[in-house]
Length: 492
Image (cartoon, rainbow, N blue to C red):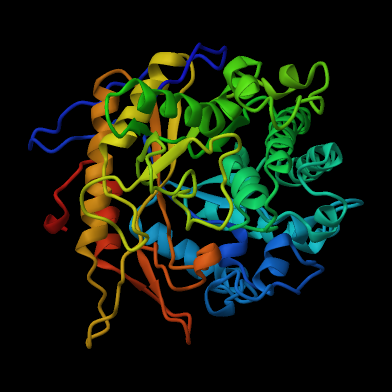
């Protein structure tokens, strides 16, 4: 992946991974073994204890936007079942849990004082995690913008970044002493370019300039929130951001296809890596998009604000992205890896074609290719050698169904995770400082525009009773987490 330049960040020495005596790869002591979720996808309780609608509540009620009109109103009822879910994590032997805080639950209109009932939920959740010996990793924003802020313009407006910093301060003050690992944003590329570009995610807008403005204000919001958190938290707190970086490959070695990689790298990766890690937008991105905007919404000092010190960088990866110069008869720049759409999520990239990567695919239609994760980790380690990395999302959807005896066997998921953990271990052996891995996801949940049709969890959730059942992948992943040894899946 053609990432460029380097950045100043927290210093830490890589912990070498060493092989286990049995020959199976072994991860170092202290490596974080976790699972990840997000508030709207699991909590439910959409109108309880002062919570007001987010952009996803409205999007779900727009005909044709979400599979069969599914909503997150109940989701998997984690709001009421969180103690049960923490027990599931503890039984697996997880050492960390990555969750998100619901902005409309703790600051319902996006402005004004916090709602203590909302904050109390996260106090109870983190207390439960700590009592179980599980490290809480809190994400401030996983796409659930309060609807009132969207009505005022949403992420394309600077005020949203300012409101985000205020919200970060409120949550930081409330959970100081409980949470030491913090993530500002999850996948801002999706928030900006799927939410405001292609329209396949909430709020469902299709305006390339709005998408670029949103990307900038997400960068700014990240920086302002990081400043607010550092002011509210003790010095031991660790700050990060989670990016769904695209592992890019040209369809052919041709100059034109390599130029397509550069163009998508600019608007898919470096649009965030530039300000956040380098302190400036890449010039080629500004040149590529000059026909759309003059970027006058970037004020002096904004890029410096976005360039806050990170204690680690979160990497989300599922599948590689294969691109080419547009060939006659192909659809230009419509495939986004998250469901597609009528509009393009790639501003100023109409000359680029997207192609299915070869090999087996998950239920999402995403190619299974662990080498993309290795490429991302190794590339980031070369370009930003001072910053530790954590895989904050990786997983797969398959069509899991309970057997007559109630068990759920999902060997494909275990094989997917095994392959990607092997890629992580290989990157570590080659010098990447990777500190942890968070499986997406703990539970089958509301999968955005796919509703409840797609299942990513290692725990099956019955759509009627909401009963949780561990899949065979949960038993296998639990053994890996408890031992730190990458056993072949069928050994569990």
